[in-house]
Image 1 (cartoon, helix red, strand yellow):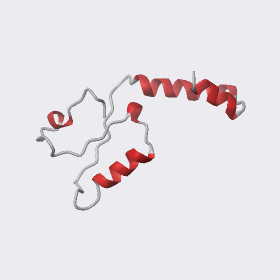
Image 2 (image 1 turned 90 degrees about the vertical axis):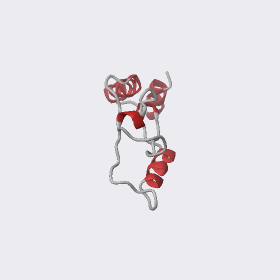
Image 3 (image 1 turned 120 degrees about the vertical axis):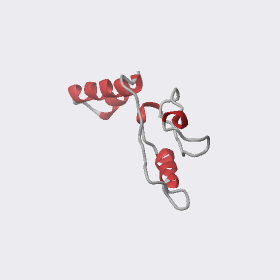
Image 4 (image 1 turned 90 degrees about the horizontal axis):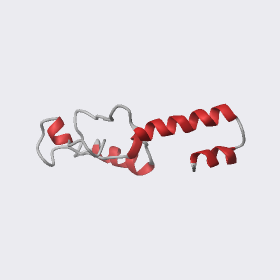
Length: 86
């Protein structure tokens, strides 16, 4: 979820009524997946899981551009990592 969004206001909920996590560019890692698993497990399970992002996300755009470069070069993994680390 974008840090500029207040989910309680967006969904007309009270403070503490939602289990919200945030990540840059909607990137999933083990910690986020674990948090989502915790959020939907008993006794916290809710009727709905929402993944919310925003349009023109710079983090997602940057990742997609890096992947496109990797696909075009079709070279070794070391060169891919160099592109991603720029």
